[in-house]
Image (cartoon, rainbow, N blue to C red; front, side, top):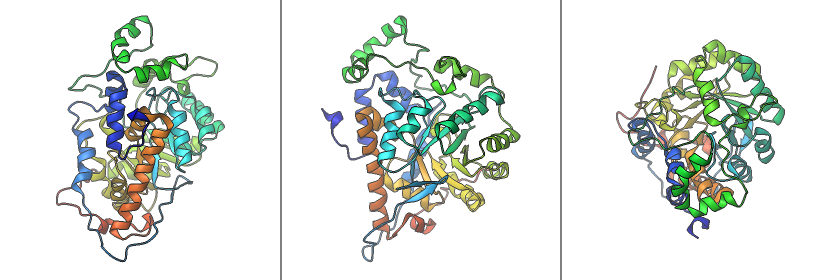
Length: 390
C-alpha cells in the first residue's frame, strides 16, 4: 500500500494523510481560523525568501547539532506540542519514539491523548506544554506531575483567543464517541477502512479524553470538558507568567510571542526561551507569518533567551531560512501529524529525515559548514517582507 512506502516530502505525507483519514479528522488537522489568511501566510512567506548558492569550496561535511532548553538535538528541529493526536492509535507515544530515534526533542500538549508518563518513557527529551487553565493550584499540580514524570522543560502557550470560526466550516468533533456520534461519523470512517482498521484491531476507538488535564484521583476529562474550563479561566497576567517560571524553576519557554515588547516582557518574567508563533494560523487571523516577525524579535532578545520559530515549516530549507534570520531551532506541528497519519511512527521518522536531509543539502549549497554559522547574509529577503510588531 502507498501509505506504507517511504515518501520524499512533507507534501506527499500530507496527501497520504488526506487519503487515509476520515474527512473530519483531516479537516481538524488542517485547521486554520476565519479566512485562513495567517495559515496561508505562514506557508507562502517562506517561498518569498531565497538563497544565493555557491558552486565550489562547499563544506564536505556539515554540522547540524544544537541545543534547546538544555537538551541536545541532532538537528535544529523540535516536534511542536499538538493536542489529541487521534490520527493513529499510538498517538503521541509514536511521535515521541520517532523523535527519540532521530535525536530530537518533542513537546507534549496538555490536551494530548496520552499521559505524560508514557510519553516521557518513550522520549526523555519531552517538554510539557501548559495552558493557563484552572486555578494556580491546579496549574502547579500539572507542573509537578510533568516534573515527576521527568520532563526537562516547560512550554507555556498563552496566545489562544478562542477564535475558532472557519469560512469553510469546522468539522464535526463529538465530545465522546457514543452511539449517536458513531452513526454520524460512520460513513466517513467506512470510507477510510485502513484508518478504521488500525483502531479496531486495538479493541478501542479514540477516547477523546485528555489525561494530562485530569485532577488527582479523577478520570480524564473529555476534550471539550477541559476546553470549557480553559475558556472560563481569566487570561493570565505577566505576574502569572513570572509565577509559572518560578514555580517550574527549570528551562521555561513562552510560546506564542510575536511582538518585540512581549518578547522583552518574557525576558523580564524569567523565561529561558520564547517561541515566535501564531499557533499555526489557528488563532487570531490576520497575524503575519512568524518568519516575517522573527528577525525583529531575535534582534531584540536573542542575546538573552533562546528564540525558536514555529509556523509554516515544511522542508529543510525552511529551517535554514529561520536559523539565518535569528532562530536557534524550529518547531514543527502539522508535518509530524501527517507523517503519523500516513505511516505511524515510521511516517514521523520519515518526516524528520526529510527535514534533516533538506537542512544538510541547503547548508552544502550555500557553503556553510554548520547551522551555527548561518546569518542573514545567507538568505535573500525581498523589500517589504519583514514585520516588526510592538
